[in-house]
Image (cartoon, rainbow over all chains, first blue to last red):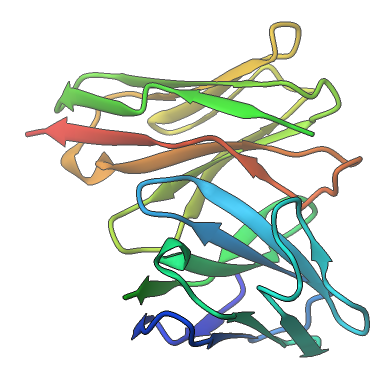
Length: 113
Length: 114
């Protein structure tokens, strides 16, 4: 399994501010995925980050709100912009672990006041 | 797109009993069905998966069954232990939507009572 380092592990932020979450993988991967897990809910895919191209966003998520960077094959960032309390969630990055499987980072617990 | 439904949302069993969690999916093109276990405050971890060319798969106390015709699949845990307590998520994906693009169910919180 890949080793994924996700930072920060948790943060408490004021509404209107932005937070950038970092995801570092110990091996090169073509795709990285960003998921959101709202309190007590399931995991929802926000976007797929490919190195060298713009991220592909799922329905309901837009680049202005969740800009993503993918500068190389081992690193990605997700920014949660202009935060509101509704953005309070766990944000997880994940990478493929084989043809279909996913391996998840430890997540970032975000609370917005 | 794919819609995965999962039941029950919560499940309590006595230690040693069996637990069954059921999921249905909507996209007949889905061909990969993993199950993830998420302990409190930890990342989701893959515990077992099944592909559409197989009807059943077993790994020690855990088994998964798939009924392609009815579009449902189930997780079976036998001889449950307290450490099985966690939230379990089913998921589905297909080559068309992207093999690693998993659609998750809403989760089942399993509590094993010692």
